[in-house]
Structure formats: structure tokens, C-alpha cells
Amino acid sequence: MSFLRMCIEASLLIRPAYPISVPVRTVRVGKVTTVKRCWMGCLFCTLSDPVPNTPLPLTPPGIRLEVLDTLTVDWHVDRIKIRGGLSSNDPPEYWIHWIKALRERTTAVLQGFSAVEVYQWHLTSQRPILELLRQLKWAGLDRLGPGGSEMLVDRWRYAWAPYRLPIETWASIVQWAAEAGLETTGTLIVVADLPADVIHRHWARLRNTGVPHIEIKAFHGESGLAAWGRPHGWEVYEAARIARDYFPTEPLAISGLPDHPDWQQIFSALQPIHWLTTAWEVSP
Image 1 (spheres, rainbow, N blue to C red):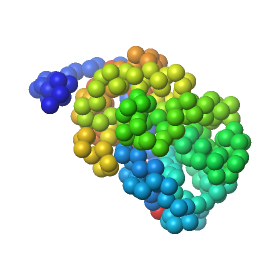
Image 2 (tube, rainbow, N blue to C red; image 1 turned 30 degrees about the vertical axis):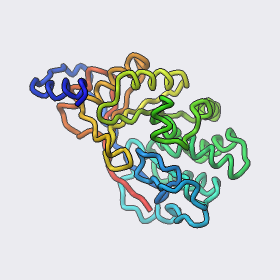
Image 3 (cartoon, rainbow, N blue to C red; image 1 turned 90 degrees about the horizontal axis):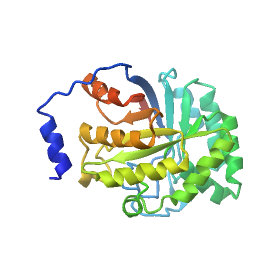
């Protein structure tokens, strides 16, 4: 058991009291998964396919446009996250029109795909990255998802997600996205016993990319990283506290923790905090 874990367990004996000067903002999120699996095999992702470079014609189709008409979901959420994946044989034009059809149904913030999918579309379609980003903006996308930024410390990054983009490429796409009028989200996936020096180095590299939105995700323990285990809420808090050294004023979005008032009270000390809650999920 690590020293940090021992401190966390000991802290449970004491109920901390942080005054709430500004309530934590709750953000209701709808989640759409567009494909069933992805060939990248990232250990933190439930879409992981252990065999890289799966031939595209052999992969299952993604979620179809007509499915949107059959969904009985609350479109009046605050944000809709669209999770992609590198397994669908649909060209980028398909997903651009898919985003446009989704935009016609909701006024929620649309956070969709990521620099990873955009780069793949660039390779397969031979179209400029900036052109693809501008078309996503035209379709109604508000911001790119955080894919590719989950772990930026090289040794850990290669172990968790060896096929992810180099950080320099990811950062370039963040800049092109801003030029196209799109924002981008960066993230950290927090697992149990994640060393503090790794957290510091990750946030330092992410800050240098200029990404405007930060999300801290508690690992859910259901993918290839399961051996690490779910983090305790205090470990997620520590990652957020360290993030404040690098992002002193930006809202920190917290996801993956229980919607418990005690945790929201604790995290309120790091204001501004956005508490992400899942309103609904759909997948193919």
C-alpha cells in the first residue's frame, strides 16, 4: 500500500468541513458512443480491441443517423459527449453530417470526437486537418473531446496507449481547432496510487498545449487498466488540487465520482468546479 493510499484511508476517520462559498455547478451530460470497438487498444477504454489495425471492412457499422429519431432521451441536457473510435468504415463526411443532424435536435454543448479521430480522418481522406475541423464547426460541434490527452508522461503513455498521437501532434490539432472556432478539452485519467510527480508532469505538459477546458476523470475500473483499481475520491481531489497549480482560474470538470453532497462540498474548495453527471447513454 502506497503512502498516499495510507493517508487517504486515515483521512476517512475525519470528516473534513469545507465551507461552500460558491456551489459546485452540476452539468448534466448525455453520452453517445458511435462505434462498438476501436483497434487502438488503449488500456483505459472499454472499446479496446486487443488486435491493432483491424481491417476496416470487417468492423461493425457505427451508430446510424436514423437511430437519432428513435432515441427517447432528454435532449435538454447541458452537454452531449460523442465518443468516437477508430473502427468505423464511414468517411469523415458521414460523421460531419451526423453532427449536423444531432445539432438540429439539441441546443446542448456538443463535445465530439477528438484530435485522434480527426487525424485518422486526415490520413484516410487525404484532406487537410484544418478543413476537417472547419467542417465540424460548420456542422454545429462546439468542442473536441479529450482523446489523446489522457496521459502525457511518456513512459506511462506508451504503456497505456501506445498508438495515441504524439503530444506535439495533439497540441498542433488543438491550435488548428482554435483557428477553426472549436474549443478542446484536455483530461487526466486518475487511477489508484497514481504518483504525484506523474500528475505534476502531466498537468505541466497539458498546460503547454494551451487547451482551454480541463476534465479530471476517475478511472472506472472496467478496462485493461483494471489491475490498477479505482481511485479513492481523495486521490481524485489530490489530482484536482495539483491541477490548480497549473490552471489557477479555469473551471475543473470532475467526472466518475458519486453524486454525493459530501464530495461536492470537498471539491468546492477548488472553485470553479463543474460536476459532471450522466443523464443518459446510448451506443450502437
